[in-house]
Length: 325
Image (cartoon, rainbow, N blue to C red):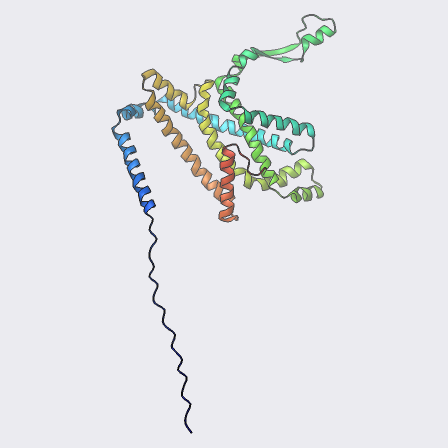
């Protein structure tokens, strides 16, 4: 009896190793070369163009008047943001109120101050003395009320001030920027409140809290995750917008002092470059603080949440509300 012969099964053919060919990016290298040439040209211009007057610029950008203007710029930024944020919270709460009068007034406020450019607003506020040469406090419409009762030239006013004495350039600048900022902060705060689940407020109300207390203790703390990052962008925008105070004018301001030195010495361009350097320095400090602030408030939301907060902040800086249709 013969043994069965094994069937002739062909062995599997061994696959040849894959030869990976790297993808070539000629356009990328061309872009790098173009950028390198442009950077070299820019550095060459900085070093060789005599219009910059580097020595003159360095000697004048640290003078006491400029440093006082720097302090004034920072002070105006801080005061304007504090007033703007507080007023913006009040307006945002009014926008979400069930009272139609409050909703209407807050809507008109945000509509007006978002529509008027800040430069134009500051010019108008700097000339309020034309509209009201003197501000007096007393009984409203005293002259007309006196005529109703047969009293001619009724003057029921307690005290008053001339507009020029009361509204200094510094105060006008702070008020103008703060009133404008409040309109944008109101939209940011309102978007933050709307991002909170409505069930949170309903649960707080069910526990016996009033609407105002529920707003302060429950809704606003949760909305801070959405409110804080755009507020950082608004602070940066406010710091840059202090340069618009030259329209009032505000003398205790950085750009005004640098421009004054340039006009007095007929070397205005180097002082403009000095202003750019100072603003780059100040904004860089704020950007570092904003980075850590955003990282703190985006914890637990991953990269998607952090990117969303960044997008909301940039949108708020340009006056766009991403939370609303």
